[in-house]
Amino acid sequence: MKIVIIGGIAAGTSAVAKARRLLPDAQCIMYEKGEVVSFGSCGLPYFIGDFFNDENEMIARSIAAFEKSGVTVKTGHEVLSVDPEKKEITVKNLATGEIFTDNYDQLMIATGSTPIMPPFTNRDLKNISVVKTLSDGQKLKKYAEDEKIKDVTIIGGGSIGLEMAHAMQHQGKNVRMIQLEERLLPDAFDHEISELMADTLINAGIDLHIKETVVGFNGSVNAESVITNKGEYPTDLVIVATGVRPNTAFLKDTGIELDKNGAVIINKRGQTNLENIYSAGDCATIPHFLTDENIYVPLATGANKMGRIVGENLAGNKKEYPGSLVTSGLKILGMEAARTGLTEQQAKELNIPFKSVFIKDKNHTSYYPGQKDIYIKLIYHADTKVLLGGQIAGESDAVLRIDTLAAAIFAKMTTEDLGFLDLVYAPPFSRTWEALNVAGNVAK
Image (cartoon, rainbow, N blue to C red):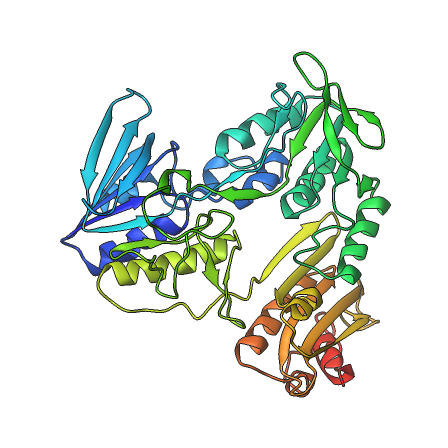
């Protein structure tokens, strides 16, 4: 048995590690275009923002560790094409330029995603960067540590943009954020939480521009100003965080079924429509737990879990991933926010009869120091009261409550179940009626 993995960051490394344990005699080869494997890019904003300094902490497992387990790792190798009929791939050694072919019995595609760079005028100027690779992080950390860099412009109000705003302000920079859409994170959160995020940014001194379109940049070597449809703003550094697209262009004409955005379409076993070819991670769709629809959600949690499922099935098993709830969270300066399941907008688009409730409560008792506001939104079925989604914002570990909501949705609990769920009470952590209990009881 020869197993070939294309991509060695999250899903690919999870798959090959599991497959290797189950098939100790199999030949396992992993091709990675970059120079590192098992790299957690989620840590980049915190590395750039100087919350930690050792970049190696973002690498979960070294190349040496994989090779010690019997996996052959080829970094600096780009797979140019796949021939499913011949069970063959064409590979380029980026260091030497050599192009060669390799064969496989089982193939996994885990090539991840590429940051989207819109067609801005002068977008190739030196001080314009995305946030994806270790080299991006190293470059941006140097800029962040340069005292001459004072004004930073962030384009995009998604998770990476918000985390980079936090990082750059932590480094003492003046931060301007420009968001094309009418609110922050519109696909992940409903308007109540988006508005809380915007207020947090503004109160912290971030210059937030909503519903504004970046056209391009002025400058010769470096961008000296950002031009939008509403004005021109001086800048010393530009960070583009406008989303990602799947790395699947090399799969054209292979017969592998792709979604409209180019993501590889897979089933709950991680299988593509072609025999012996699997996929997972930011280059692929993932099934939604509540709808069974194939969705595109480039999150590390789903990549690692689906990667492990693929590893099982590469070894001949028939494991299925139950589906993603798109559970995610982020920290913006002093505020935490998290979400799981369906948003109100998504429930509308799916024509699900639903109700929602939004409450403001407290994180713990008034007499214990540090009491803070906590905001909770529940989306639930109008008839059955079964939970469909939830969003939380606040401070002091508010985001961790989303795990309870994710488990409740997974278990198909109702709002009444949540209202009487036996949750922890102690003055430093909660009130006698935990905020989640309150939200459940308020929902009618």
